[in-house]
Image (cartoon, rainbow, N blue to C red):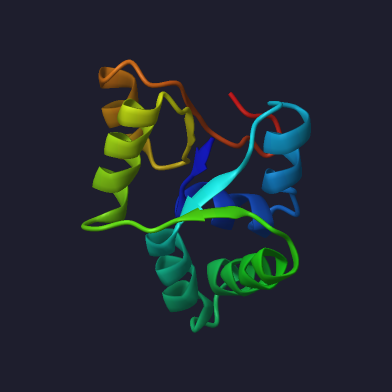
Length: 118
């Protein structure tokens, strides 16, 4: 399952282990793109709740082996294209991206405050 920056930041802001949820509850491999890592790095320099969450997410990514894809172009476009081509689901808390995924018939989930993917 492809995981977008918005879900990672939301999850880590709310102390939710998004990678564990995808692996254990969804029985899927969490996958992120290099673009997501770039976005997390950019956010991590901010002194906000989201910046702290991004910094923590980057630390977790360094310790765990999360599958990472090389991408090209805008992150959201790549996620839609890759999910469609590879038959993958995606996790995003970005309403616009979620709508784009669903419009293409791609399973799109979001992280709730209780840690449920829906």
